[in-house]
Length: 352
Picture 1: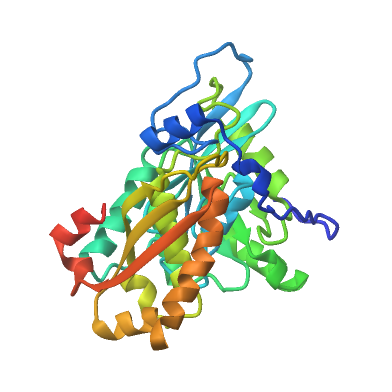
Picture 2: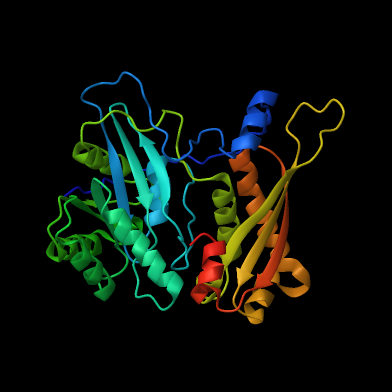
C-alpha cells in the first residue's frame, strides 16, 4: 500500500503553442490522407527495432463505476488529454487507448466505459466492451473514489473481477478531496473488498502518486519489446477524438439526464483552399451532428437564441485546434433521433 506525501504536486498545464502550426506540405498531405495525427499511430502498428531484453510492456484496463475518475487518471498517466472527462456519469462511450512511456517500460492504457446496470441496448453494449477488455489485458486497474463510500456498484465490479488471470491494482482516486482519516478508512475498506496486488491512493487532479502508480504497473508488465514508437501517445482515430471533445464541451453544465442521451458524429472534414502565399495549413471546416433523443433535450443543447450551442462550439474549438495544430471552423447541427440508445441501426451508425 502506498501513501502520498504532501509535497507531491506537479503543475504542468499544456499551453497551446501557435508555432506548432508550421508543418511542411508532405506532412500535411499524409495527415489528410490517413487521418492520423502527429504523435499518433493507427491501430495494430508495432515497433520492430532492437530493444533492451529487460524492457517491459503490456496492456492495462482501467475499470470502475461511472464517474470515479478513470478518464482523468488515464489523462494524468499519459500526460496528454486522451479521454473525455466530465462531472456527469457515463461520459466514456468507447475504449480509449493511451500510451505511457518510461525509460524501460511502456504501458498501454484502455479506459473502459463505466460498469453500470444497463437500461438500454447501448448500456448493454458498453458493458460488453468492458468484459472484452478484461479478457485481453495484462493488468487491471480498479478505481474507487476516496470521496465516496464503497457501495453495491463497487461490490458488483469486485465480483466480476474475481477469477480473472490478470493481477488487479486497486487505485483510490480523488484523494485530494478527503482528509487523511477518511482516506485511511477508505483504504481499509478497499482492502476488505478483494485480493489486490497493490492498493495505491492517487490524485490525478493534483498529480499526486501518479509516478508511484506508473512504477507499480511497470513492474507487473511482462518482458516485451515496445509496442509503440516513443512519440506515440494514442492510436485513437482523429474523428473520434474530435467528436469526444465536442461531446465534453456539450456536457458542461447540463442536466443530469442529457449525458446518457447525447451522441456526436463527425460527418465531414473539408480543407479550405490556401490563400496566395499562405505558408501555414489551411483552415478545416468540420461538419458535426449532435444527436439527442427528445426535442426538449435539443432545446437544452441549442439554448436561447442558439447561445448555448455557440458556447459549445467555442469551447470545443479550442481543444480541437490544440489537437490538430491548425485552425478549424465547427459547423454544429443538433438533431433528434428518438430512443437512439435502443435502436440497433442508429447504434451501428454511431459506431456502437
